[in-house]
Length: 409
Length: 93
Image (cartoon, rainbow over all chains, first blue to last red):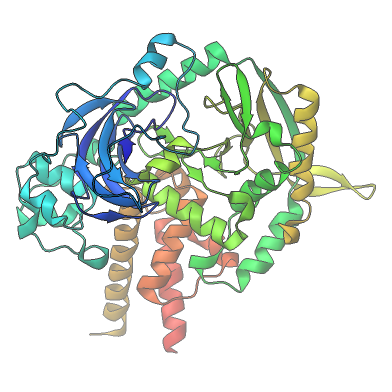
């Protein structure tokens, strides 16, 4: 038997509220299945299981707030006998960043099961009828329905696969659209998000000795290559220069693994997987950096689709737990409306963040002659506990080299 | 309907489509307050990903092919409406 725990979805998370179960006792789950929805400061996050098996029982009621590490459910793994005694099994097998520096938080991160919910309790908690039916509905729709005491089962969904979306709930009850201030970022709580950003960034500036480097590169080859490539593609399939930048960073990590991983318990743990966090600005003033998993292994086309999907889901508040918890390095691009350079703050427990400023036209010397070229300023913030400026400079230069030959990305 | 009336009706419909799709991208912006001649990147805080999503949506709604080389014509609401209108006209002719 394996305990399914309240995961840590970022260094700053101490507790989460279970807002919905998507499984019930007896259900079979596969690795990667979404089993619950948890409300955090970053919004509602869909929680996946890393363990295949059968749900034995649910230990936490809907709408309960519990600390990170609290067992939420028991999963009977494949091949376990029915009479098997529950043994404390390893929780989530992937490295989950856990706050380490402040001892109080570290103590909070692995609390015992709440006494009122003993593991042996076989009784599944009472579930609301709507939850048991597991109607496909977006978190925003569920939230609105819950706020207004509406039964989702009487609503016809207009979303993908008949899923109930926010507007369906609104339409059903002739509700006036919420004021513009509330609609700003859909259902995301921007004030809570700001608190989470503040906690993570303050911790980063306190604990991580940052060093900063910058490097200007000519991205005219990228622009020319993209123009040619995109001319033959419909808008859905077109690539943005941001996808090339992301891939270049992911590939450069192969030679410079010391920038990819977590700094935990006073030592650096490099990560084999290259899960690049994509810094995404939320309209109305918010920021999240969920991961694109194995970005180094993806084709540019898949990387671009992945980025579009991630941006869209982040802005509408449908990020998955693994995307929140395991970026191994972050990339932040200002895009065409920004300024020329940004100096990032590392998201703990990561050890590096790479920034890309906006593309500008500058006089540049190519083959001994001055001409107008498209130029980008790349920056690196590195963790001095792990690397030095020398390695950082080589890493940045390597990224720049990849961007000179976009056809090889 | 006269030719002018038809053209007017088409412009109105295209304007409505552009506003709907912009509203999907930037729901917090009151498009009634946006100058049709204003640069959308400034007025509605559209980034390159938003813009690509807008072009994709307009392509799906109207069937009009919008190559990247035409992006400079799509900077304002009135520019987008004029561009799509001209494309529809030339497709009919």
